[in-house]
Length: 384
Length: 105
Image 1 (tube, one colour):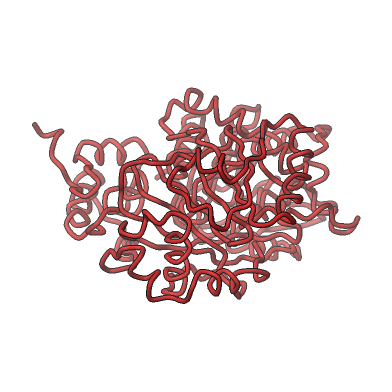
Image 2: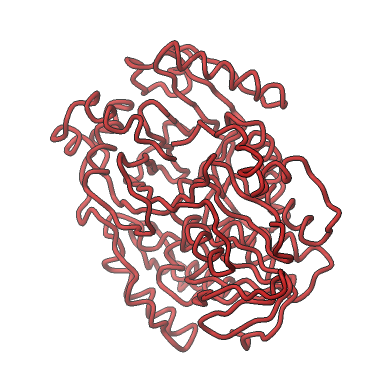
């Protein structure tokens, strides 16, 4: 590893998908000496623990637009980054279990279509055509978007980082940020476990730890990390390619390319915190639900379970861009469990706003931290 | 045929694939190798390949990261069929009712 730098033009805190993608997009701009500091290793936090789903079926226009633009980028990235990422548009099936829920989904679909998303409403019978082994007993209908899909989180994270490093970005792993240094209402650098770096620009892409990192610069960010558990089964013949989600029954699962089923839920009563341990209650509840929705999974064995952090913001939408009164500080946090799928677009917006003070984009502005003072924008409801 | 030497039998990962990943991304730990190649993610959870991956890392890098000691095996210790736990737990409706309304995410 290279000597630890004393100065940088930009320090990015976090080597997950957000930090890596911003580093890559910034490296394509006229900005030199970009340093990424990562507490552990690349993708060791939320990115490497997520389900790998990519969807544009959201309930707020901001998320729909960011996700649609990200899908467009995902299509280019394998070639641009010269890396296999296992990107696949297998679709997302979102299940409805009552007429009330179906009506909510109809509203979402109207809004999504207005923004150009190709999404349709399915009956229970049509749902069964997409996943023939699904049990439709408690399914009223579903929404279906065939351009939603999935990616291997590790591969895309490392691909972004590798390409950023090839363009001159320095990465320091196992380097924890102790505090962000400020003075005269501006950023002056960061203090880390390996020394201090002076820098006029700092990007907070610290995932579950973004609230803590921000607090060292005197910021009180409305972020709470929550543990989310997830499991993987042994590999079996692939019988569906899409993600299956139910908000009502609190579950999401998909069959990854190698045949394993990967799925998770939001644990009832989970308290905020940064623990990422695993529990038996999760395993039992997931088993009941998987066994119900796909009875054929009954004999399939669960191999592994693990957990990661959702960094929740008050409206379940990311917090992006600068903050008034602290020049050089940029947020890229609060993704509320959806950082991977929004990263390709968010990183482009972030690189633009960091390098060009006059850059303006309506989505970026609506997702600024000042939205909470101005009155919260619509809360994202489509979250498991 | 050195490049066909299997290191992780569960996930069918060869020595060459592991060496390539270490060199391409400057990997220093078993966890990173696991994430990129899937070595250690299968049925045995790295019981046999973990030590082999450590040896390859040592050979490639000339050192072994201290952090390697906490590369962990995931629960459950032994794989279990979905229905085994499903049948011992409460009915579907009781389970999902507990998850409703408690969602923060």
